[in-house]
View (cartoon, rainbow, N blue to C red):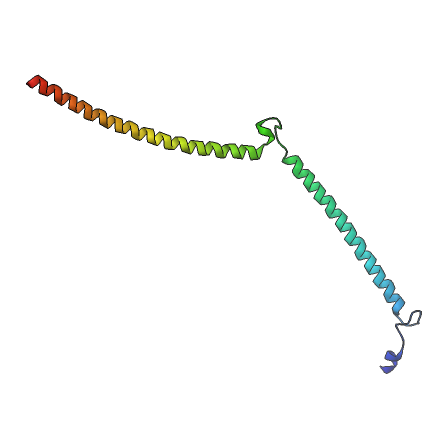
Length: 125
């Protein structure tokens, strides 16, 4: 065992199985492969991002650029919200009008009642 440790296997150009020069070549090759794979993956990701961005731009462009201010779905959503708000306002107005009509009907009944009472009192007097 001591004989194996005393051998200088790390010296370049020695006859041992692996020496420092062999390890440097293996390490250099591994670094080169990893660097190439990293560079290739970064390039591929940039291409993928560009493709995704272009697809999003294409599919979210205005359907009719000259109509509705040039916006498609966002504009429609805003208009629907405005319409929904306006419908709610109209419903509240309708409830107030119906209540006002019911109040008027009640007042008309009371007025007719008073008128009939007055007419019957005049006819009997």
